[in-house]
Image (cartoon, rainbow, N blue to C red; front, side):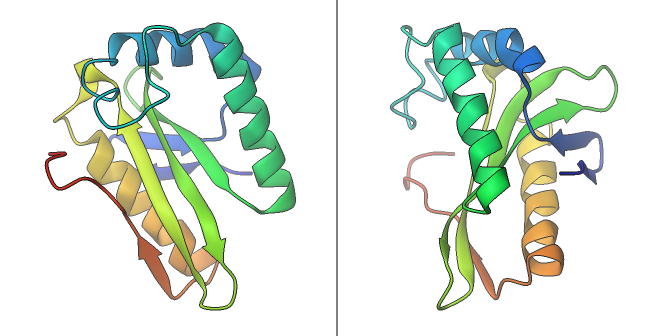
Length: 139
């Protein structure tokens, strides 16, 4: 799977080499991301990150999900993750989700990731609709 690019960020499938960065980003963000994502807890471990990377690899392989790490172009730092999943093959749509580590929030990473994932969904996957489901208070 290739990388997706938009603005100051690029997305690529996570690898085993990203496990320390994923773990660090989640641990940094338990107060912000953890308020909305039940998996982002103080108990998150490298084993959890390894399991997520493996699930991403399996999802890419069988087409059931396309998850990516979000990285800054300037330094290659992992700033979050995003992807598409929950594909509805009858009506040609999917869910789009993302999270951004606390120290990178409000710097355009989410906007760039959504734009890149949107374009991939409509252009490459030829979907008709993309949905983002979120809590009303999650700004």
